[in-house]
Amino acid sequence: MLSSTNARLAAARRLTRRKDRRDAGRFLAEGRQAVREALRSGSVLELFATADAIARNADLLAGVAVEEISAKDAATLSETVTPQGLVAVCGRVDVPLADAFATRPRLVAVLVEANDPGNAGTILRTADAAGADAVVFAGGVDVYNGKAVRASAGSLFHPRVVLDAHITDVLAAAGEAGLTTLAASGSGTDDLDRLADDGTLAQPTAWLFGNEARGLPGDVVDAADRTVRVPIHGHAESLNLAAAAAVCLYASARAQRSWA
Image 1 (spheres, rainbow, N blue to C red):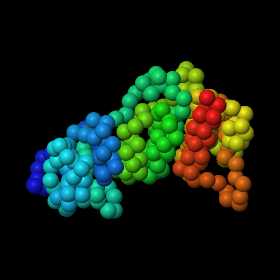
Image 2 (spheres, rainbow, N blue to C red; image 1 turned 90 degrees about the horizontal axis):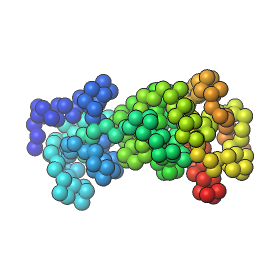
Image 3 (tube, rainbow, N blue to C red; image 1 turned 180 degrees about the vertical axis):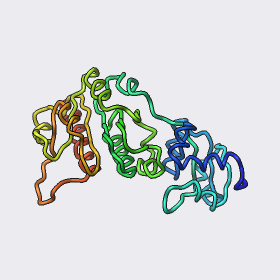
């Protein structure tokens, strides 16, 4: 079992801080699902686990080099309430903005100044499930935050992910790649259902989603090709960010398959 003072374990502990993740070019992925997808993607640099976690994940860890650590040390690597005892140190997986649009994607999710890591991870997972080719983070949350990685449930390792992009550059890249930019807004001019019915959503699309509290900045809304509202058929005032993103992305996914 590794000592608590082991240098590699100490370096891994520092990755719970954003600055250290940025400086090291590494991050932590915790839990069976995240570690499984990290292993499949070839992103794992080191793997730490408690004896109990090694026993519970024997199938996943067969033939994989694992450093055994104590439950106490596993807790210091976790940013969750209930540590999983299985943590991988991974190399960053994000790509440059130009790479994300180089293959002329059909569906892209863009988060503009989102600041909740749980929402970021959830939307990343939803975008992956909807078949999005890329997820772009324009300011705001660090997607390598432990809560975000956990919420993504392994989807961080699937679509192309772009970090710290400037929204002006994102809009320019989307336009050059032939994507229509749709700004999700409660006061949007266009109704989501109508765009699904008239074939608009069948076209290559970049959805723009804003901050949880403030929505999209006014200049971003103005720069988008269209502003779109999700119809509210009941008495709710609105949808939260993650729910609205799920509705919009799946509407596009369905339209792109139906009109293909």
